[in-house]
Each structure stands twice: as C-alpha cells, then as structure tokens.
Image 1 (cartoon, rainbow, N blue to C red):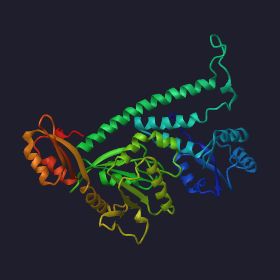
Image 2 (cartoon, helix red, strand yellow; image 1 turned 60 degrees about the horizontal axis):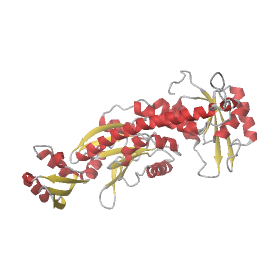
Image 3 (cartoon, rainbow, N blue to C red; image 1 turned 90 degrees about the vertical axis):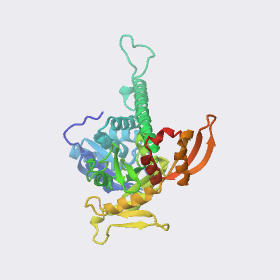
Image 4 (tube, helix red, strand yellow; image 1 turned 90 degrees about the horizontal axis):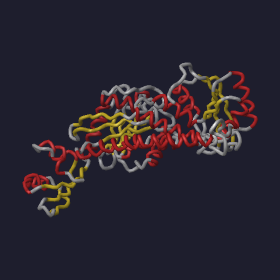
Length: 428
C-alpha cells in the first residue's frame, strides 16, 4: 500500500470558488499539498458556483473543459481541491477517462509517503481503508459479478461482498494492533504522571514550524522541511528546565483545514498525547496571511479530540520575515505568559520560550494518594510542612492514607530528597 512509482505523476488541478464558507477551500494550500505529494502540475481548471452539482460536482460545461485538458496533456490524475462523493468520482472518471482524486485522497497519499514507523504506517493504512470502504460500491461491473468455476457455482458470494468482507477483517486487525499501541502509550503516560513529569505537546497548522522549533529545543534532528505534513510520526524528547525540572516535549502531526475525519480517528493514539498534555504550545506562522483562520482551524480540531481545556501557550513563529517584530513574551492580566514571539529557524526568542515554559510548568499541581506505613512519619510531617495534605484517613492495617496536592517543583524536590523511591507509596 505504501509502494510508489519513482517517476512523478502528472495532474490537472480543479478548484471551484463557492459562496458558502463551509465549501470554500484555499487554492494556494492545494498547490502546497500537490507539491508535498511530489506531483507535477500540468494545468489548472477554476470556476465559480453557488453550490456543488449533484452528479459531477462541477457543471457539465466544466466537465467537457476538463476532459479536453486531460486529453491535451495526457495526465495521470485529476485532483479536486474538494471532497467528492464516490458517485461523483465515478461519474467524472467515466466521462474524462482519467483517475479522479479528491482532497481527502490527496492528504492520505501524502501521509502514506511520510509514514516511517510501524505505528504510523498502521494509522495511515487504517485511514486509507476506511476511506476506500466508502468507495466500494457496484459502480464497476466486474465487482458485481458472482464468483464462478468449480466449487464456486450457485448463490455464492459476489466479488463486491468479498472485497467488503476482506476490508472489514483488515480494519479489525489494524484496530487491534493500534489498541495495543495505545495501551503501551498509556503505560508511558501513567509512568510520567507518577514521576510528576509534565508533558508539553506542540500543536499547530501544518508547516507552521513545529518540527524546527522541536529540534531547536531538543537537538532531536527530526525531519523538518518547508512542506505540508513534513512530520507524521510522533516524537518524544526530554528537556530540563531550572524550576520545573524534566519536561517531556511531544512533536505531533500538523492540522489542516477540513482535516479528514478518518485521519483524526486513525491517529487517535497519537493525538492522545495532545489531549493528556499539561500544556500545549500552539505554534503559529505569523507571516501567513490566513493566520487567524489557521488558529481557528487548530482550535476546531482540538475540540474534536477533547483537548480544548488543556492550557495553551501561543507561539508566534517566523518573526524573522518581518523587519519590526522583536522576540518577546506577552503576559496576561495575572502576569503569566500567554504568548511568545520568536523565530525557530533563526534561533531568535528561544530563551524567552524556555523562560515562559519554566514559569508555567513550575506551578503545575501534582495530586496523588499515598499509603504510608507508621514508619514513614517523617515523610508525613514533611508533607504537612509543605501544606500539601488535602485529606488524611487510616486504613484497617493502621496505615496513613494521605491525599496530597503539591506544586510540581515541590514534588520533584521531595522525590530527590528521599533515599528510596517515593513512588512505591502511590496508590492512584
């Protein structure tokens, strides 16, 4: 599924302007997507409509014009900057005699090229199969034919039904494997929580500079390029801050306008890192003319994955493209950092970001329930000195059952002061 022909495919692009904001797409973004996919553009067909046409999505006149362009340039594929139904794709292919790919299919193809890890490939294949399952209909005559031959005559199973069954079985198999990956990730998250290691997840619109910033902070050497979806597989690295101590930084896949729901569902295990993070770094390309729209789109995806309540620090990147914007930290009404202006590429403002992270994470509260034997009275007294005891009861065995709430920095100092691992008393 991930093997590709070495020679670049040629394509005709189709972009239609609609009156409805919900249907409207960005032509410049389509060109970036196509470039990221390694496709050679031979022509562009544009037009304006009030709404999509039911049969072909575009009008019959545009269909004839498209067919003429395909014949003139002898291209491999026609790429629509929109979501097409399965029937619209088939109707177009029947007329123009060329493969038709919609926006979702293009994004899935880019993801297939970018996937490197076993988990990433499974996630992409799951998204592709879910997308393909909506396209498996009896539009092609051979799919509707009943199997024949010795031992296969009779009512039997039609080829279309066989394909659907095989798809369902493969999807179930991939889901089981991804569930195993999800459990492994959950174990890692629980381990970091018990050690009070906060997680900071980088989110943002694709090509905002997340991976460049990630490399600048961690020296991780993650692939970063001026193209959409340069990062697909999640990467975790640890950094040290003066007061907050060790912090896990997570680089995640970039979001995009009208991100396919199949992708969001397939990357659930990866996006869980974002939902369970202590802080989100929302990286924004402040040089992009559609900066505000991109911010809204990222916030929309965060709502879809139930991460809208995670604290956010805005990071306005690429200030080096302006002459009058210096690196700086913006504070909110409570004196806490709310935004940082920097350039990851030129290493401007990185110290300010680290300072902002230190301020925000040093005050993170850690909550645990500890079961302390009577011999740990010294530790119990220390917890009271730190004003960290919320509630205390006694077990039937005479142990202290202590609910604590401490600041991140105090908890980490306590961990270092104890001769033996303090985690052995945690019973969360």
